Length: 180
Ligand code: IMP
Ligand code: MG
Image (cartoon, rainbow, N blue to C red):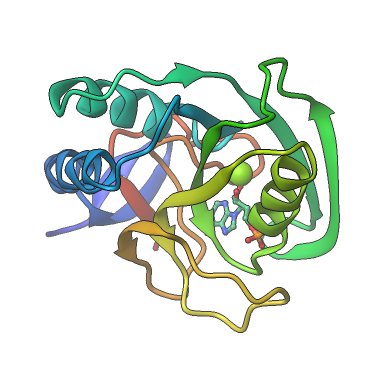
């Protein structure tokens, strides 16, 4: 696909809106087939609010009706690389003890964000904790973790769009791309 102009930049589209939608429907089928009980899904803000919303509607199509809550995490980073610490900016309010929880994130890189969130949910007594990411970047993880459900392997580039930002910009793009 040839590069597109958006928000004053030239962007190479890596995953189109159509490709993301088709993969999201397939992921919903995989998640429904995994047989969760009393499921709570938790998109990690801010980056996964769009993926979370689309996945939730795809889950409805496959017959799964989960409860939804959010956690707002910040992982300290310079513009494009994570630096280590994860902080809870706003916590889950839903009851977690004894239930199945599916954490949703936009992209898995160092693994710190998802590992932190999984540990937190487990420490609150969830009976099953699973993870779903739209993108998995093939980088050296700081933490050993692999997602239970994954949309796509992502090139080792800083990507934007479909909820993901670069310095608070580009979340509105309906596709995932990189600035060229
Ligand atoms: P990790 O903690 O290093 O795995 O990073 C995960 C978080 O960093 C994601 O939830 C994103 O918010 C952010 N992130 C990592 N890589 C990218 C990227 O290429 N574009 C935008 N955000 C990213
Ligand atoms: Mg994020």
